[in-house]
Image (cartoon, rainbow, N blue to C red; front, top):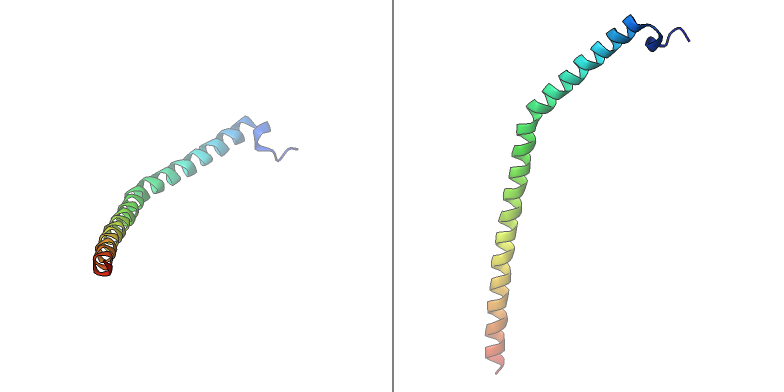
Length: 74
C-alpha cells in the first residue's frame, strides 16, 4: 500500500541513504574488529603450533622408550 517506501521516490531515497549509512557504520566496525580477529587467529595458531611441538616431543620420547624396551627384551 501507501506505506511502502518504494512508491515514493523521495522516501525511497531517504531509506537508501539510511541503509547506506548503516552499512558504512557496520563496515567501519568490521574494519576496527579485523585486527582483533587477526590477533585472535594468530594466538590460536601459536597455541596450536605449541601443542603440535609438544605432541612431537612426546611422540619422539615414546619412540625412544619403545626402542629401549625392545633392546631390553632381546
